[in-house]
Structures are given as C-alpha cells and as structure tokens.
Figure (cartoon, rainbow, N blue to C red):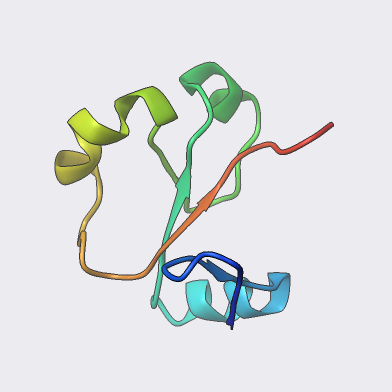
Length: 76
C-alpha cells in the first residue's frame, strides 16, 4: 500500500486489495446507496452509505481499529 497526498489515507492496488481480503486483513466498505449496492457490489463488502457512516459505523463495522478500504462507484 502506498501513501497518497493525505497523511492518513493510503492507496491500494487491485492486487493488494485482493491479497488483503483473502488474508482477512481489511474490511471492505461500499459507501453507495442501498439500491446501488443491491444492483452491484464487490462480494464480501459491507454496505454503509455515506449518509449513514456517522450513525451506523459502530454497529456495522466489525473492528473500527482494523484497516478499512472504502469504495464507491466512481466516475462512469
């Protein structure tokens, strides 16, 4: 994993993510709406829409101190 411009944010390649997921080293979070998540998402990800993060993160994420990889649909 390599650092990006923000001090606390890391970039991860596809290969690094796949490896980390296989080893159970990260929690993968999809921040899209529930409808978008239902339509398509990465297997094994947890759906936590951006609007719900502050309220639901403690109940949805298994370990808030573990590495978390967040993704969204990005530009289409």
